[in-house]
Image (cartoon, rainbow, N blue to C red; front, side, top):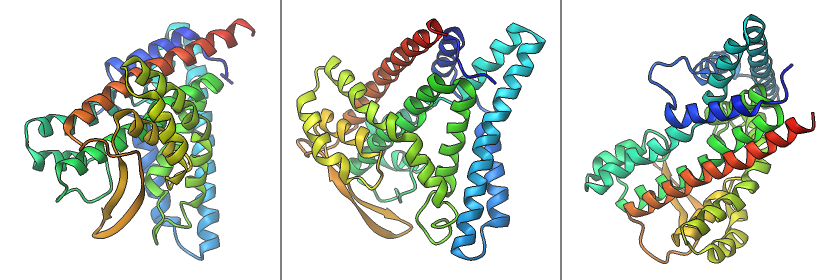
Length: 321
């Protein structure tokens, strides 16, 4: 079973994601994870609350363990055919667990129409990757939704997969991807998923716990590089991170709010119902499209800093094998 990741495979996998990302119609593992989750949920999300929790836990364990085992088996099988094929397969699988390029592209999808003054298009594009209602949002709320998405997904889509690559290579990174996919599909607190997705949501919280806290230092370092108010951001993090409904999401979001001197959180509307999320940061200026631009720079630099940190860890691990 593959546990120790070679620096070459790690570096090439990271660069693949940065350069290529997720090509259209590419057979991405998440597509098949999503199909498996949807198939199972439609057939087994029924019964008493206790039974739904049990069925949801079984789905989570099966998909996470299966993703790990299948990834390890595919890589080992390819390596037995040839070392070159094994490296190629490993690089592609590593790259598929990362969302560096696609996350920045998502931010740009909203940034471009906002910069041009096309609020309708910006609202439409934001609706592609947030679950809140976007049809009537003013510019500031569009910006807030985009910045929150970029900040939170810096952990889910970039830092956490890199972290698990260090611990267990492509198999463990793919297992984390299964956890993240489960949470994004069934980890909601509503009538349909409250019980069935409970274990998946808690597993996602546990899996992101350490990376979310590691993100604080990385984002502060990125902010220092861009001469942003690091001291203010640290104060905001200490004050506001714990107010976020997620045990992890408040860490990157509060730091970004402090670095950009903006306020995140507040009123969100889901399916016509108003929900209030605790505010993070101080509104020292109004939100504009420039805040998305600055947040994208923070995420981009934070991604490369994370890569350097994890690469150093992989080199160290390999040196003491």
